[in-house]
Length: 318
Ligand code: GDP
Image (cartoon, rainbow, N blue to C red; front, side, top):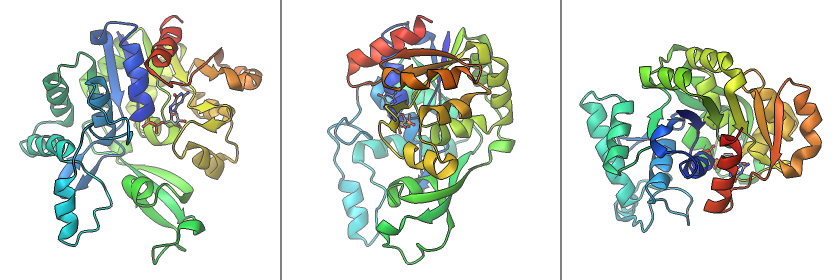
């Protein structure tokens, strides 16, 4: 059994590659829920859904999120009623949120509902939220001056993750990140077992602070990962000194003043024994090895399914 800790987009591509290298039923994907938020009364789990849609072949590779061949009639209607509608929800995607919300209201835990959804799509990878408790990533900072279009941009304030990421296009100068609820969150027995019984724990090329950070903020998960450090392998989300996509570079600059792969290695140091560094960042290997981490250098850019499978092959072969 292999356990993968993952966010949405980078994570799902990596898991898809992994499922080409080992039996999908031997993979447990422990997925971030720090981005979850309620919209129009519906519980939206962006990372769980991205992983599910990608593995089911339903993902929208034009937008990078949501479902392919999507329509947006429901959202158009919401907007026509005067709502700002800043969080885009497609019609098919809404079906997932309707189902999830109904089941949660009936008392089913998120892990059970997630399995119901992935089973309905015929998936063999076991997709699990890292907790059934509520953990929410909150961003404290100030909207960057170049997108001043809100009345309160000059003040530092607390943003929900989706406000930060979608409403303000992650153009926020970050002072700190807070994982609300993480200190009291409990782990599902399935996650605990997956962390203890697996041969290897993999950290997908996901955003360390936004996708993996919420998990590390849960004391029990942090403790399990620390204990399994020797068997834990992380793939760098930095390629050639930059984030492949998303706000990672800005976040590293705001919080650590250094956007190199070494910043990520330092963040993962207590939990990760082996770090996969991209070939373009090989000059940083010595600095990372000095942190008592083994380094493996290879191409990590998942440009297509072949590249995803090749990267997963390197990791599985270690
Ligand atoms: P998530 O964090 O898994 O939800 O997904 P994102 O798509 O936001 O990616 C998170 C991080 O993974 C970003 O910081 C990217 O730099 C990194 N990433 C995305 N695609 C790739 C890739 O093909 N290779 C590597 N090495 N990193 C990637």
